[in-house]
Image (cartoon, rainbow, N blue to C red):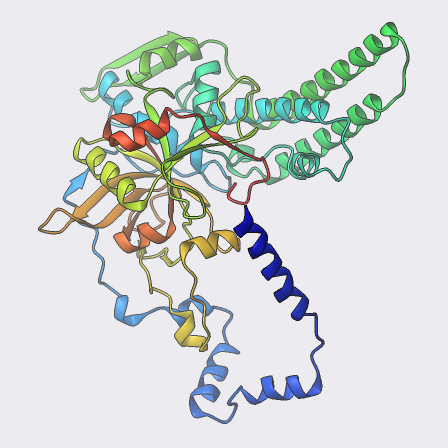
Length: 468
């Protein structure tokens, strides 16, 4: 405690000494003098860069071209590339892609997709309900309260993580794609979500105004509670209507006809819950699958939970065990050797050659191109918001050297077969260390220390935490 006070006092002294200063003519002259405008290299670069808006192409390292192949020693079975189109449903596609090979095997199919649109409908509907419940729970706080600001900033969004998929399928089941196919608005979600969020913000405001009304007596209090309840239900009716008009209404029962590999036509009549029970992997669930994460800003071998990061009110929050990269890689390699792919998420845009389907450190060298210093480690990038998980994909393969040490890995992506290397992205082990964040893995691949952390009481992180 004494050391913390000493450090705080030292920081205060430094900040006091570094008072805000304007850019004086002398300072500006010094800065301008650092730009060697007459140097031939400067002139050449300026001519090139002022003529193209594409810094990425200019920074592409020729020396790195062709150094990463797409061949792998260990690779899980996968079946075809999906396309999430212009939506933030990567977490949903990744979750269903992990399970669909099992469905193909069960029903003897050449191809199969789940209806991501069906799951998406219920995800947004449940998120709307959670938002309204959060508004009611925080109605007594000021509008500039940090939690209130966070809730109203984005009432619902189509992003998410694995626990959201778990919450939805366990409650609503799942259906084949043919039963509830994609629509224009499931493939391009921004306009629909914009209207839904406007609807929810308006309802949230009315709820707060009603809650702030001063009343006396038990009956008046009960009447106000009833009014708030009615406002919430009416808002959910509006959200359901928007979703049903834009996405189609989810079936309560369906008949599915399919052709098997040997040319037979079969049919199945089921409810979504019954179909999920039929295709649900035997060990699927929060007791067996663990989200492990590499976050160097926090203590390793600890379990963390993000407050209110779920979709259903009664569902699981986002919970993870923070581990060093070495532990995560060892567990992931063990899973792939068993043929089990994993839900994973990363900072996909960093050092990505989307055409070649390769991610590698130094693939784009902005420092040498521009003559600037951009060096930061992973911890610094996280704390400064320069890096964070942005996309979920299925981790399906690993290649190792002659000592069985990983050298590169591969994702099955959901950007369609024309993106990357036939829909796949290959990344080096060094890139894994810097830009991989999360994996959902069967607990049987974790070591004792990680399992102990998984069973420990989680440290609760606020809904506005910088990592999420």
